[in-house]
Image: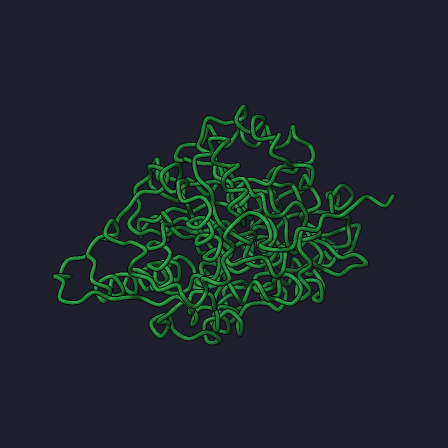
Length: 483
């Protein structure tokens, strides 16, 4: 075997023009002179890093194996450890010193605060942004504050059980990782670190169609046959969705398909639009989409979401059934009327969600929709599992949802913010939520989730906001066509 050629950064730096370009990626030195001519993003992004270490920029966009799939880049050597280590050590120290120590994080809000001060401006804008005036995003959180417990006393609560099942899969807690795009923007291991952290704590991850890594590279991060869910956006090119479903269904551990139905188009997320997207900052291998800038701004969600099929309708449910044998969950139900239609279609579960307030502003908080189901179609609770997400930050929020009939709850942004600390941050967040949930159960007077019921929650403060029928209570007007 030929021994590796070791090069210094100084040697690499001399190869910095379009006719002689080398870059460093993950410790390897590549000659990318010819590759620039065929790079899908054009030559400019590569030329910008010619003669330099492009590892950070590359890893924010691509999985490590991507560069090996292209025929043109030629490995000319490896970067010498002596020239690489100091720079990486300094970068790591700056990153770590900018965050509180993990031991100082004691709730989900602490993770959010740390992320707001330490991650890139664009990543923060993408993760934290929501539609237009942020009313729904903020209501998701505050709506739980308007529900009050009715604790029962003098119960033996010395032993607590939080285990349950979601779609037949055992889980240590009635919560899961909601699908969230591009986790690699906050940590180089992205969804793989999320998966390891979730699995180590016994909860399930729902992987986004817009994940930074292919599902085939995420699943091996966990023990064999560990359960996963997958969130699907239907592509305008249906053949691409069909091929994706065929490929992922063959993977071990995949247990359900979550079809997103609340985002036929991308909501107007102004904070995300206002911050320009760097070239190649974000790309998703499973959706084959990339972020960019245009006359409307630099919104990652909007520019990456152009492939989503806005013609998707109830008529397409049989098509989806034909593509998979897995249980189907409709993610994004916001009214009892649509919940009833889903029930009539034999859907296995629904997820009450408004996309974290990122789609239609002033749409209802999921906890309000959960109450609407009780008013209009209570029979649904015996026909299918009900999942919810949006605004859940505390163990008390989890317990309120379970008491009101939810099977489990999902958390999206909190896990992304926790990922700022890698796998350990994900594990820490789960431990915090588990502790808060157990204490809440003890304080309310129950020892098992099967004992939770609506009588333990006072909803009077919001009951007047919950519709009692599918139609308006008094406005009977209907529009007349004028054209």
